[in-house]
Image 1 (cartoon, one colour):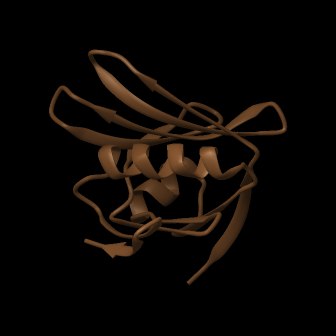
Image 2 (image 1 turned 45 degrees about the vertical axis):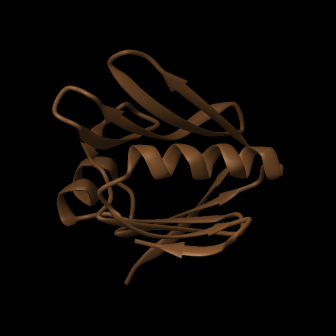
Length: 122
């Protein structure tokens, strides 16, 4: 399985009546956006160039390491590897923000995530 590490040192969440978006940024640019569009309940990943593809089928957030399992179409459209890994170089509040956003945005995907109460799986 091919893999590469991206790095995000900034996280932000935006929510409107149309969508809920997690923004991962690094070195002053968007690394990746993970978005849920409420119209049709579609989850998507957007790369830094603005290309959009279907969201991951599975994801994990263990410590500060986020892993997203992309399908072959998303790999081709986004240029990310199938096993896309992002190191989250943010504080504990940032990790909590990422965790809460991903649990809502990627609700239908399989996941493993660390919480204050322990490790949770879908």
